[in-house]
Image (cartoon, rainbow, N blue to C red; front, side, top):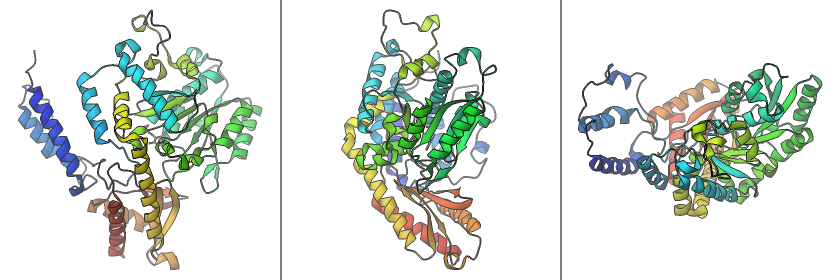
Length: 475
Ligand SMILES: *Cc1c(COP(=O)(O)O)cnc(C)c1O
């Protein structure tokens, strides 16, 4: 039997450490300030033969690991999208970790299944999806999208694709805009449909949504060519600049051709708890499948992706397998959520949602999201008013992008791409805030999103100060 751990002591120590960590975040640089290989160089090449003292292990965690961490719960994390872990969801995760149950079938933890059904229905109501959508927690939006693409494949192949494979079948075609997340590409690869059969529809308008006429034309052309259109993946709040498809228009085209529609709202879906933002996905009630990540903006610690399906029978028909040892005889009619997702094993993910929704209430979470949107709009306005900055994409919810043009805003002089790559590097080396760069229409821009759970308005003001100070230092 292995050495016995003083579990009580170390559990308390870990919890105390977590509290001290969270309260000290503002004093830490947001992005890790280490060079590649610096952490690895401090780790022995061979595994330990003899057990070591916990004191030594814990000290190495603090001395070696901590400096190599980027602090995603830092209130001035403005990069990518947030991965919020509200303190109350961290507490729930302690409990989940302690119980460490595998919640793949109803009988392997009835509470996990029944709570998941209930809190997902709470979330369905919270974001304004109509009754009839059933929810399941997937480990990621990538997995939800993969599951949706597999359903598209099976439907289009008369429920024979899993069995016969794709070889003998005509080409399946899936449609999406140029703005969708790379998880869509990977779902198309993994499903065997193939990247050449992901048809990219050009975007149009301020929201950079799919051109519905181009979509209808592409479907018609494919049918003429003997291909089999299988489904459409629409997005609400694309990763780069927050692109939003006109879901109502996409659904209209889909219904004309009997196509399955999946909506990826991984980031923006959390904002739909506020009624005033739902115009961004108007028509969503006509979709077949919708995913959003409470583990992004809402505050449920990763991993927690909410996947809503209009007809879960299609999903179960696609993904359920029934080996003898998983059969739960006598419990017909019960939900086994492992039949709703690609992985078999599943953690008790519903508990943190239950804690989060009960402790903060929808009103508390709405106030947070409304603040983030307002502070982001205010920052965009302040930067716009500066003579040497330009806004590249206007705020969509709490996401916008900008560039520092220096004198170039008026004269067109200089190389703005190089200038902004250099600026974002210096901002992240400085450490007070964290931003990421991207490109839009070929131009380098800097993305800003407000979304961290404990952010306050002064953090947006700090962002303004740091951005303008460092931009002008170079000039
Ligand atoms: C973050 C994101 C994803 C991927 O989410 P995971 O849960 O990490 O798989 C997909 N789509 C969009 C629009 C995203 O912002």
